[in-house]
Length: 170
Image 1 (spheres, rainbow, N blue to C red):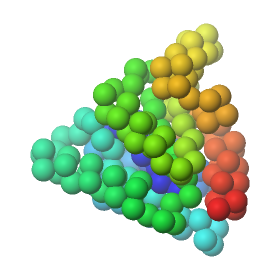
Image 2 (cartoon, rainbow, N blue to C red):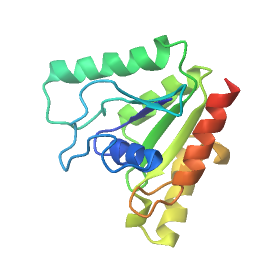
Image 3 (cartoon, rainbow, N blue to C red):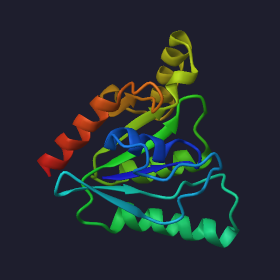
């Protein structure tokens, strides 16, 4: 199962929460620290793949292009890929890169689960509004969205169970 999203969306923190370990994936206050495909083996045959973030990162254009190729290759050329967890910061509107990635993901038959991150930073009213807005703007069904927080652990058990379920059915 591949984890993909913009730089600074919280991929490594979410992976740490899912794995129940603080230092499973390397986290940083500076976006763009994941620069390669990092694979974590979980429960025997399940592999979680932490991909570099797209969008803002203090790297060269060449390095960004390499990230884009790596992400594309993992998402389109891996026959063992059983699902994608697409992380979006609930506080941010989808960028052009988010929209392009979403279209690319939906064009393939691989199951997609959207994890809205950093929900602890919003009030309940703001959260409901942002979930509805993102769901509508990206044309996502409700059952493909999980509201998460690596800080409060909201949605982590649901995300973990959903990933395990998808992996078992494939």
